[in-house]
Image (tube, rainbow, N blue to C red; front, side):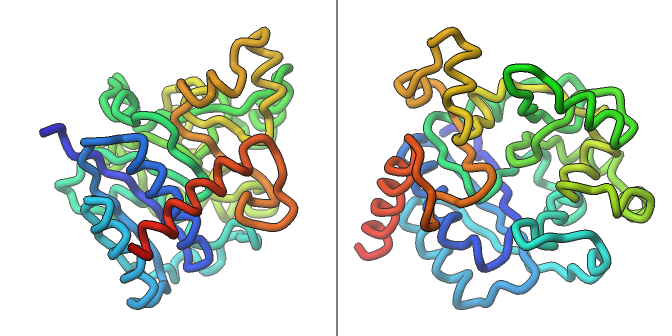
Length: 276
């Protein structure tokens, strides 16, 4: 049997249905792969957790929910779209059991279209995490973020990360995070992602966004940049994590791009499995 792959999600109750859709996409596109799902939260009820647990059982995934006290984050910057739970992934090495040596963290607004095994087996060459950058046709955002956060490396999207938790346990300290929040609080635009880049981006290795963190809003950009190669068929055959960045989300009114119907398909599959 293949090695069990650990997947981490940190969220509040508002993202439970998208999480269930994502788990359904993982199941259909990773046959015969063993997964352990870790759900870290602060205030999701036992009844709500049970719904996810039942789906995980039907998908033959192992599942464990960990409730933590998030009071240390009380003063940390948050916005409606990015609640306090987003910070929990920064302390994944501390929260998860020491027996868990690595994990793939995923945002809940993602569809998984192909096998995650290649990323799981990636050699990070001593780095703490592997992540993608979203740079556009002309990379103007990297320099802006380097100046804004006083760093000399790429700006990584934290929605998909392969994390070496043993390295994280050596490097990540709450005291450093707290000091960074105190220093940069007013300048933070995407709070936990900014902190992750500011403190730990130098311990990251870059992975191609087209495969590992495809921004579903930017189809035309990817198509143009690839000289027409990365069309919808290419995405379906090669992209692993299709990330619905920004707003509206595909489960909300007003979302209408070439991947909306794909999301709706997995929503219906999830409903069918839950009702069976």
